Image (cartoon, rainbow, N blue to C red):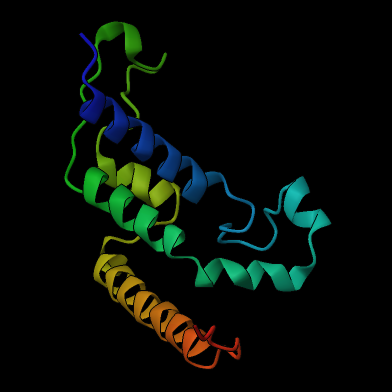
Length: 134
């Protein structure tokens, strides 16, 4: 039987992991730019730092994989007999995530939320539309 909340969580986690790990704008090394990033102006790469989605996906990925152990069946093992990855920390290391950054990302998300709300409030405050009078 299909359970919508569980399926939704799995789908969102997969989306977040793919956005963080494979996004051309989320790339952690300038030399690994994809074709999409190479056709965008270089200044647009900095817009990635203003995206709360980047940080929320990173926190979700770190939270899910930190301390996780994987167990392989004999059919899933590599030809050398190893099981890769054996630990979630190996996956985090492969994608360049540091567990110590988790709370930093949470604080950045809070700061971005406050900043976006302040900008929205100021935009509404200084809106010059005349009030309609009855």
